[in-house]
Image: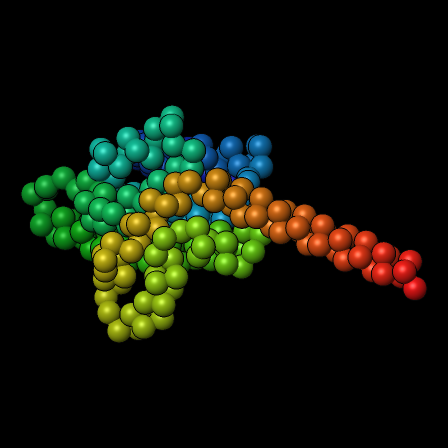
Length: 218
């Protein structure tokens, strides 16, 4: 209910509604409520990003980010926005130069705070996606660099600025690019599970047949 109220707030607030990204995130949220959501991770990410973007009522996204997130070819706008935040960091936003220096620095500070949250948002999203997978190692097998990312995260998180977690060896970006194909990744994992069960069943049947044949000889 709270999430719906946030969306209604966006729709009713002219300065927020004028931001294309928030418009598209709100449409995505409404679609999830109307038709259901394939993965809970998408719903959670959508909620987090709507909450995050509403913290920036006077800062818009860059034109390229707006276009990518709101493209009719974008299946998951929230995932595309996270990808742009990972790839472009501050450049994903548009902050016009203003005469008021204090206002300019305030806006830049707010954007920096959001970029500092992105590593945690990404980590939570990956964890939530993994929970939707049929096996614990599904994503790590299918997404190049994810195992290394988890290992590096253990050692870096407490010792380096959050932005470093986004930029080191482009690991985060590579993961986001791989996750563009998340539907097929999870589908492949499910097929592998079914195939493994089928083989196990065939093996069990063969073993039972052999046991029956052995019993008939006695």
